[in-house]
Image (cartoon, rainbow, N blue to C red; front, top):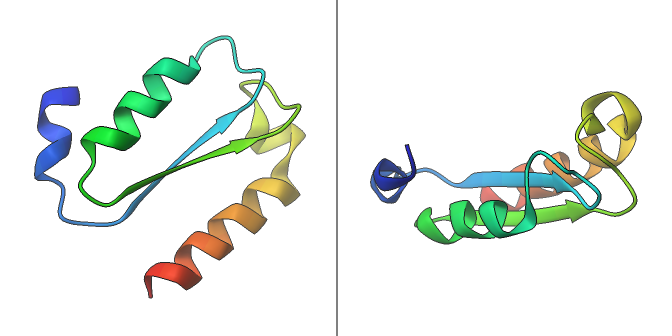
Amino acid sequence: MEDRLSRLPHSVLVVRGEKDPICREEWAVDIAKRLPRGQLVHIPGVAHTLVFTAADALARVTKSFLTSVM
């Protein structure tokens, strides 16, 4: 998958919880760098289940990202 990311023409938001033991920081940074229009955001104090444990923060960063690319 990683080798094909450079071909994505769209803006992509990579979101990682700061304390995520599954999506490691190094991997998230690498993914964002491979995307021509990638942006990485860390949500502080959150683990892998940020959709459930930090829904408001995720919504904020997603809204901000969408506003910036539209």
